[in-house]
Length: 286
Image 1 (cartoon, rainbow, N blue to C red):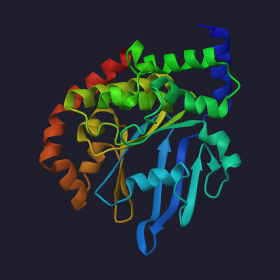
Image 2 (image 1 turned 30 degrees about the vertical axis):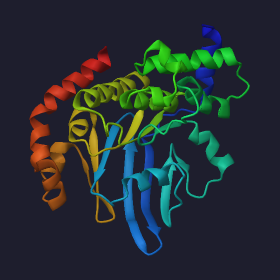
Image 3 (image 1 turned 180 degrees about the vertical axis):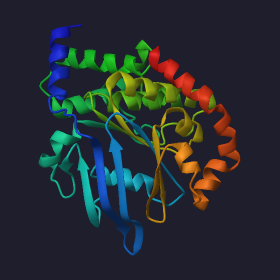
């Protein structure tokens, strides 16, 4: 591997990093589809270096919130700042510099089925660094594929040839293609069996610690919340009604929070929390 060229590439994609207090700041967000109001007066922050879990009942607009932050949904009102830059109304050229500093894993990986895993991972690189030669792009893609724990031969396979868990890992590899500082993950463990979901949680924790990532994680998986999230934001009543650690949320008397965290699934997840967090951190160290 031509390490000098690869190192130069990595330096270029992180040259705008800074030590600001928050990776994301959202204030007074309103989203609506016609007369149906999804969010009204929503505020949320993602601190640098944290994994923030975002939860809420069906229809509370968790994915709409993520889409608003990354520019796929134009809000009716409100402010969205990513790394201190105003994203509302920003044009493609204005937001291009910020967009290359994040990676996104949509539900089910959202890989292009007609492209191999290597070609999927290379797509963001081609968009921003199209002049890189093919050999270097192949080396970068192979590095990202290995980083997420996929076998060496995964790069030449098409998404249909991979298991669900492997497709999600391939999606993470693509999200990491530009060495981002920020990851958006939409239901990353949905559809995985408990063993696969725990392994994926450990991967996210390891990547956060190893790459100093900030992670905005939409999930309904209580095991994930207990195992790797530093804080949890709860969406209800068209806004974020609470944000904090799980013990802090359990101290609140909101009916949805109590039903969610103290219901049967919450009671099952809580006793295993220490073991799951230990496994995730052990995966980070490995």
